Image (cartoon, rainbow, N blue to C red; front, side, top):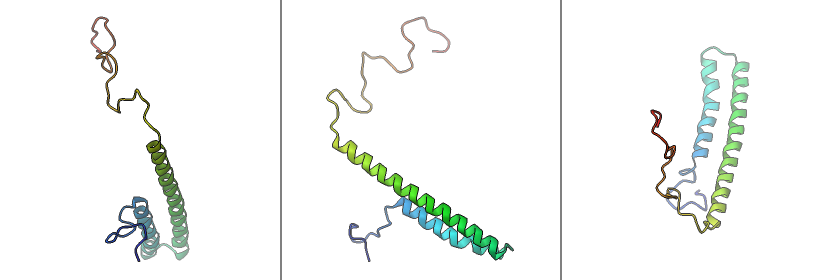
Length: 112
């Protein structure tokens, strides 16, 4: 079943990098204990590793989702705010031809 806000023909996770990370981490949580047991680690050690990986995965998921929410909120706020009247854009030049890094009109030194 497709997610209601996703256009037909696309899966809900097609544009969800945080979800991709969480899915790979969950896969690792299942794969790592199997590999540990195959290579001689005890079942208890593999279980502890699994619990540790699951805790880290859950914490990362929470942080990623929080980051996405704050990023969307910041984008929404910046889209609602009008630009100041004197703002000319990100790469506009201001002033009378001065360049960044120029030290002024004094004598030229070897460091200029």
